[in-house]
Length: 105
Image (cartoon, rainbow, N blue to C red):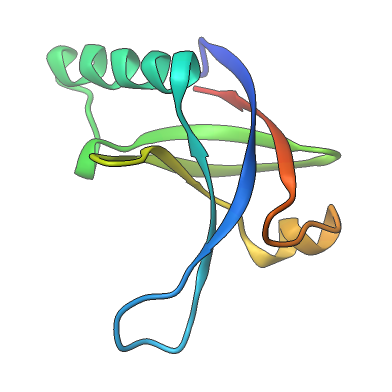
């Protein structure tokens, strides 16, 4: 299912928004890595296999943690990779840490 791989580093940041009390943590994928994700999303949309919101299913690896998720395009910020609390705890990550991630998609 996964045919492409990329590795990049980005700072972990927290989004708190709306009227909800919760927050989300993300890595923003930009540059050549973001361009590759955009090209892949366009290719899949043209093939008729695109997903909602233009997202791409990925298998992400951070440290020893491997998890399935999706990356989401952002008009102003490249691609957003959500990082769950369980992954942040397992890898001892905090907001502001620069994180290396490997994505298979």
